[in-house]
Image (cartoon, rainbow, N blue to C red; front, side):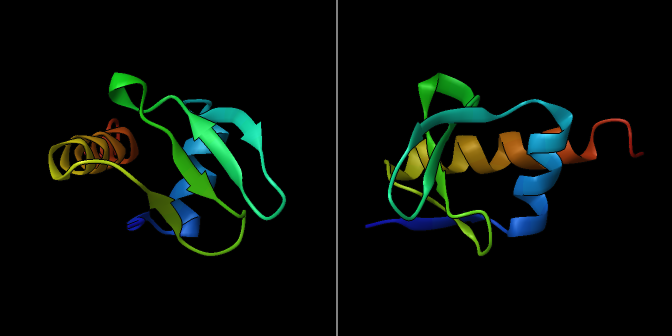
Length: 74
């Protein structure tokens, strides 16, 4: 099952910050790397981004996304 990990706006911001980069190109999506523990995020560039992994990995990646987006915005 693919879980919803980030909104398009969050992915665009992570990309602009340079913390994620394209790892693999699929027909309808890109796989992005840069998340902790070598986890990859799938995103089609328009809608929400998906993640396939364990619940612990999901929580770690989601926490990492939130931390990246809020660092320096306090």
